[in-house]
Length: 399
Ligand SMILES: [Zn+2]
Ligand SMILES: [Zn+2]
Image (spheres, rainbow, N blue to C red):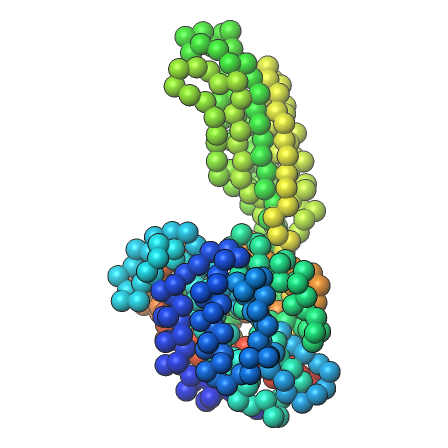
């Protein structure tokens, strides 16, 4: 089975689904309207209600398409949540409710629906089952965990899973609207950890710094050294980043007692994050002590890296090539340290993630994900649906 032509024919429908979902963006594990609309769309495709399983209190759902009874099942996971920001595009189908699909998850939902339709229409010769998972709560890493705990990977048991993310930027040369990209084997997304360092000094009158111990002075000195952990102590070939993203504390009239800085560490594995944190803690403590204060340091886990299964990567490449042509399957060789909660699926079963170019080839929109003006290229959602369906098909044929 080659889904290219069938997928192409879906494009007008994909546009309608995407635009409808774009108008009703919802947050976290509260994507009830969105999940309701998706359920209606699935019913309109002809999928029986008993094959649609509402999950996370109705914020998400999993639909099983039953092909031949082979005992095999492959998953297609798409996320469906949005961001709490006001849309600043002039699109006629802009958000109506103050939230925004600024990460393009509306396009993922539409592409997942398209894949469901393609597979459902060809179910009689499908060599097993496909579970299409519409997941809430990706942005705050809530949804994947909730669905896994509720048993999304069971009944039927999911043997392997694919997911997709739209990308507005150039992952590599040739990544034009509708192209598909997979990694060269490295994780598709990074491992993130949150850190917080509390610098403790001694408060005092701003006219008498000599009688105080100023934690603002300490953190200023520390931040400039922290970035040296990457630029001076990390092999340049190792992807890693430290971002201090907040400084909290202080007031106008008084030298503060304490100041807290915090942010995110990212790399391709947890050990590297732990090493970065340990170095940062050493620096913060020694800077604070050298200035007469002290520092309390703590780290908490974000998401693990999203590991790719090498065999699934090969299937995904071949499946994508059948839809877009081999020249438009782009191999990503640079790390992407964004976090993704699809990582929790990939911790449990073999997984692969594909990136779908939603980049206008010559402008007009250059905004990145999460930007209130983000407006992805709408011309080629069919290549996303087609690749997801083709992958599921090819996996079941080959396993
Ligand atoms: Zn996002
Ligand atoms: Zn996203």
